[in-house]
Length: 323
Ligand code: UFG
Image 1 (cartoon, rainbow, N blue to C red):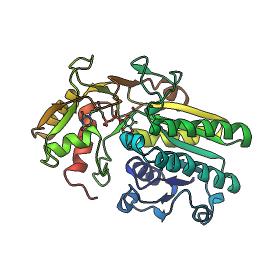
Image 2: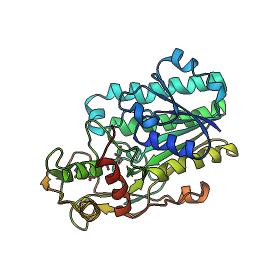
Image 3: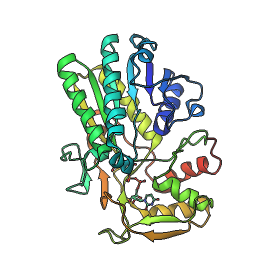
Image 4: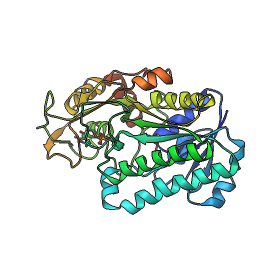
């Protein structure tokens, strides 16, 4: 297939690009490099541009593509609270611009990068697709708005779409060539490994008084290559399914912050200096995905479910990060 990967220079997008190339697909990346890295796209062609630039989208000749996989977004929750216009502009208006250009060009399949942040505070620890969606920050709200646009577009224009709600994307390609590199870095596993490498001081554990087995928050860490595989399965699913679909993607297991630190210590053999800090605003105690729907309809099961294995791939990247 010929696939346009918007946001293919970012963390999850670059793993998607590598996965598609490895499976013989033709890939073009469109990315404004606001948070992505040109080095991350590897052998794929990179077109630098912004989704809100309709001329730039026209120059892509979208009619040549079988599908668009769309990762472009701002994704830092506290920034979205401080500057919601920036999030709605980039994440919602940017997506609308892309969808309009796809419609003009007759491209009828999109796989969209959504998030567990659409759920807000969970009313049960294990979340399936029927759990109410009540986002508690503009980042989650912006992603949920796009899910709504996709549903409307399916009814009005026949757009076929899958929105994939990731839980905690983690790990890196085992090659060590690509990985997670955010500025600033807010995510747990990169921060743990940086603390272990003596970069950025001691890890702060945000809260040790949650109602969990050791008082720290439980999250569902899903390997980034398992996410990439799910996206390709979602594109294939759209060959014979109309409509707008949503799937939760996680590995179905929860690990506490302390357990992730222990796994990192075992894998790296280095000490992870940490200290306890107050709770971070908006952190639910436990978030675990039920991915039964993806198992049933996408025939997808995560391959890397052991937290040590996930952290080990992240470590290969972080100890010699190329960007
Ligand atoms: N944490 C720390 N110290 C850190 C970083 C994180 O203790 O330096 C803790 C957090 O408090 C949380 C857990 O580690 O309990 C995981 O935090 P992350 O920031 O790695 O991930 P989140 O669960 O906050 O966020 C992820 C995605 C978001 C998405 C959200 C959906 O990264 O994009 O899940 O709930 F919005």
